[in-house]
Length: 498
Image (cartoon, rainbow, N blue to C red):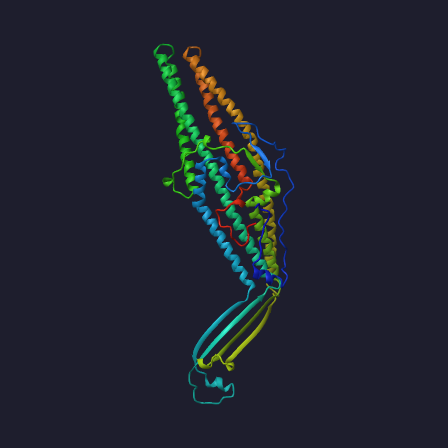
């Protein structure tokens, strides 16, 4: 079931009592989705063919809840499973949601009467002066006696102008916000883990490529030394090749350090200590590039993105707060009553003669508060308007994310195609130049230049393929990540799930 809007139903007691009065203040209406295109120029049906894949954009396609399965990597699936099970960030977000649920239930109690029962006994003696006030003349002191009392008290605040109902609406909207924050934490974690795995694979492949280059440079150094020994090359050629080899050897430690840091970051994402974390190695070849990419329409993006839904929930809560501020300026009506028995012994405590009761109705109308209530209302209005502006900013930022990801996928494919061609051409050129050098047809400088060209092309190709995989993951995140298909998090919260 796809997300279509926000659902914040009152509980049954709240719904029943809501019919007895009006709720002052503005009613919240979810902002409409903007009628705009996702990109400034028409999007092609598919990207350029690169690496054997042309990614196709499927308009209106649904997004799987576990979209990372599309990369067809068991190691990635295992990593995501571990992260979702052990992430401290998700655990904290879950507890914030639980707190918000309970605050909703707490607020709903304001619509119901409060009932209390009291029972007490006290030992006392009446003074002569007190008895004289009631016409009893006696000079000797009265004897002490025990007074037993049992009472049931009921108090009910009539929510005539909707202060309590607006308060509940505000708490429900805040619970909706925490729900969306949980979804945002989930989406952020899954997106970060996928992109971290891609970067891990990219670092790994760069290290392998650099080590291969070092091996090639080492073999070339042996050839140069043999040629110098035979008198076919000048001794300076050895120094040139040694410098080229040392340059590549110097590039290896930073790559290894980057890979270690990336794996430490992955450990932190899954809630593990670096020293106790072990995961499978990732390579770019182990990650399959998804061919069909979902392209949500603007209304779907508004409904799917947790950050937009959270901003709407904040606006809803602040709108309800204006109603609370309005109601605080109007009369508050309270009904209360007590019924019970009072006697000097337990045997007669519950007889008709010991019955006592009282009923009271009270109305409180603020007259002069020094401008406090008026200022509070203006504060609530300003906060609501700020939330509306922040909502608009969130929507604009979200559409920017989508446009950036779509544009990146277009250019990524072109870059990969060009990088593949450059890598293959540079490798062939290096092979030919080395063969000619061995036969004396090329100088060493030509070999060194061809090596540099081949090395640069190989590293550029790795980076281009890594960027394409990373930007693919970024598009899934920008579209909302398919949270509405999830089954891994408790779905029960205040009736907030569409």
